[in-house]
Amino acid sequence: MGQFAFEKTKIEGVLLFKSFGAFDERGGLVKDYSMYEFAACGIHFQPTETYFLKRAKGSLTGNRLQVRKPQIRLFSVLEGAVFNAVIDLRPHSPTYKEWEGFRLSAENGVCLLVPAGCANGSLRLTDSLVSVKSEGIYDSSAPNGFLWNDKTIGVHYPIDEIGGVERLIISRKDLELPPFERIEALLV
Image (cartoon, rainbow, N blue to C red; front, side, top):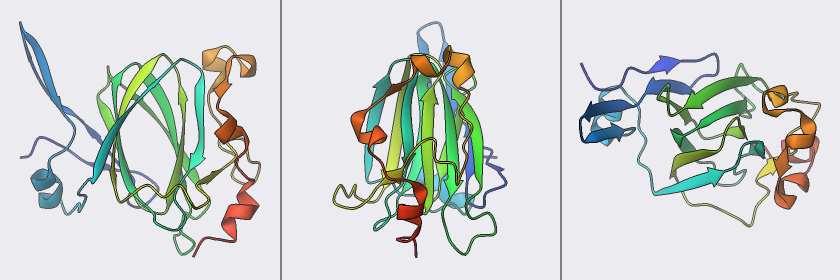
């Protein structure tokens, strides 16, 4: 048996799994990806870049996706805790425009694989450090998301857990994202 046990969710292609950890008196090692183990489970994901997001408690990232060049993304929390929402924006999917929320933390070791064509947004429940691996190149020239509180999709971020809406930290870029109806017209 491999080091990862993948769990399906209600949205096809969205997978949860626990990172592999080995610890001793020196500290530990945590692994959240193996091309060979993923492929052995029928998951074809070959990251082209990795980046790390260090954010403060209350930071909210809007519902992001690349419309023209969709990416597969793998999220792993190295420090802290995060609520991550995944929204299915694949028009021919049976769960089109549905969303599902997941709690990822360094403590629970849960990782999240988000397929191309799905948006994701996140709320930092504590100060956090998140590793993101993506397959495909970032395209800053195209629309890349919609408002975090868009009523059409209705994602419910657990804002009460950070002390209420007045404690949200949202970038100008996320505040200026369009409503979902403007993005929906671009989805193919």
